[in-house]
Amino acid sequence: MSVWQRIVRFTSRKEPATALALVRILTGVSAFATLFTVWRHDLIGLVWTDVEYGGYRPVPGDWLVGLLGGASEPVMTGIVLAGLVVSGLLTLGIGGRLTALVCLQLVLSTTDANGHTGGSYDEVLSNVLWLMVLAPNSRTLSVDCRRRTGRWVDLTPVAAWVQPLLVFQLVLMYWTTGLQKVSAHWVPGGGFSALYYILQQPTWQRWDHSWLAPLYPLTQLATGTSWFWEVLAPLWLLAWWYAMTPERAGRVRKAFNRAHVREIYLVLGLIFHIALTVLMDVGPFAICSLAMYPALYAHREWALLWRRLTGRRTTTRPAPAAVR
Image 1: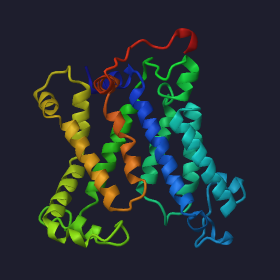
Image 2 (image 1 turned 60 degrees about the vertical axis):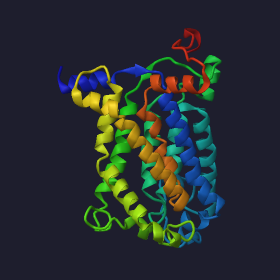
Image 3 (image 1 turned 135 degrees about the vertical axis):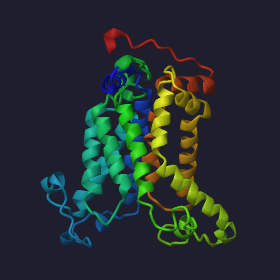
Image 4 (image 1 turned 120 degrees about the vertical axis):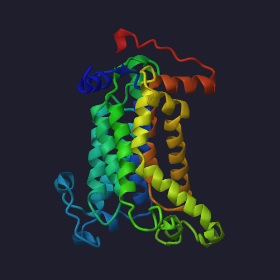
């Protein structure tokens, strides 16, 4: 079988949309957090309002902002409030692809308005929202599912081709981030002092971190670990592939699965994001990134985790044909 045939076969597989639903829920929370922080701190008039209406710089806005009359504070506030409502609907699983599309547009109308604000997590959020537009994101674990089937869970298999794209996006984000860290403070041989100095910058720190001075070697270890973790992120993609195809032969595949490389990368990622969130003010970066983590596991693995946590077995019985 050719490589292309293998790719087609893998991307044509079907399984219950459990992982996709979990991504949808976390993505909805990410969109809500992105918009809520600006609204809560009363910053709309400053960061997303055109200079003509009291902002500090020109904010031309996109087609939606122009259609509504320009980037005035009332217009941008309306878009933010609408985004909060729609992101809540997405989290609950109401409206499926259409809700994801509307949420994507509202997020773009705000986060793209001012290039001086936000961060790269805005682009990550937009990419994941677009994948939610292309996928049956409310098939299960949603209000739509409850209304359609009378149950919260629908185990009808659906096309799972979006899942590899989510994993690829996750790995690409970390890998390219690591490749951009080329200063002497990050790379081997340069002292691994980057995280220590970043934590001393008032721009990022949540509180004074001078107490870290005696723990400087630990910050060096954290710097080196995070750099290698990001630069070697393609190994995570390979580990995911091996974990998703354990039935195939190969010594490398067996070694990766036996060493739980996929899980090691995941745990390091969780530690990385928790530490950043606790020590630094980096906005909704953590939740935007973690929203893709459920895609690392297949439905059978989520079902096994559910059974271990609750003692309840999930069935593979799909929804009745009359209500699909």
